[in-house]
Length: 86
Image (cartoon, rainbow, N blue to C red):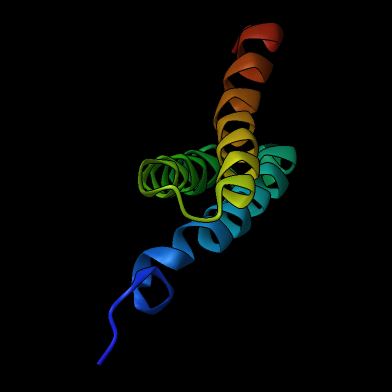
């Protein structure tokens, strides 16, 4: 039985972080209709999974994209609320 990085569930950190990051960005665009809790949840999960994937050095490109999109999904509603004075 071989055990390696290909058999580990940690190989899914990259794709999951990208998916959650994209969902966070889409939810952030529609934050006026959906609220800001969904982008914060998806964005923070995307950042967490991306950092875990970068720490294990698996799917580094996908983890970098997930980190970027997740961070933007979290920060966009904050900047929008600050700009509108809410």
